[in-house]
Picture 1 (cartoon, rainbow, N blue to C red):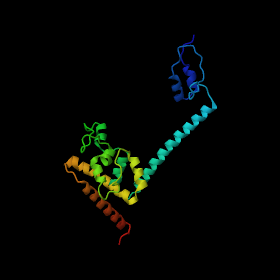
Picture 2 (cartoon, rainbow, N blue to C red):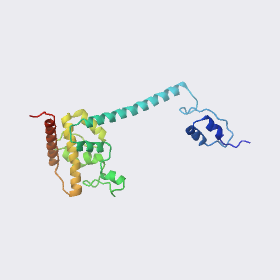
Picture 3 (cartoon, rainbow, N blue to C red):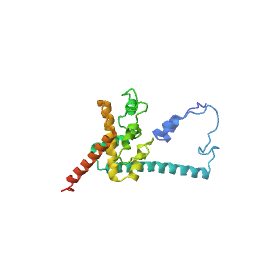
Picture 4 (cartoon, helix red, strand yellow):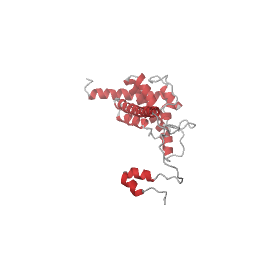
Length: 227
């Protein structure tokens, strides 16, 4: 009599444990239909050289696409760590790039705060990019004299997109100045949240510029570049 069950002992004898478990988890048809081979990539279930070739092309495109993204991310980190900026700024950029800056949106996702709104512009959700780039308060800073990106579009985009544009269009010195400003935009945000004090946009650019100049001078002195 056919019990309509897998011959478990036989399956485990032939296959490795992981494969056997997968096979035994497949339900057996209650009908009496014969098993048949079906080529999944084709709608009619029949194998063809053409369909196998197309499947191989799609797989290569997928692997190459993943490799490209990995290479792109690796290059971003190389560019970031080559900057001559204070370690605190590098740590800040690392949090920005990994989307772990403690914005209200990220804190809300962890149930630490009750609202995800921007503390400055309450009608907006405070994502990382909103805090340092899209928020009108941040845009006011980027539009000031001394900003390397004074006339840049401040619309929605990812940090990777913004960083790619920065690295393609700006000098190394201006990239360093820009990230110093970015860090100070976040500092101003926190000063407003915790001390109810709000620096004007011009001050933010000035503080960042002075900090960059002082750090650059300290590096030159440290390497014997200044007499």
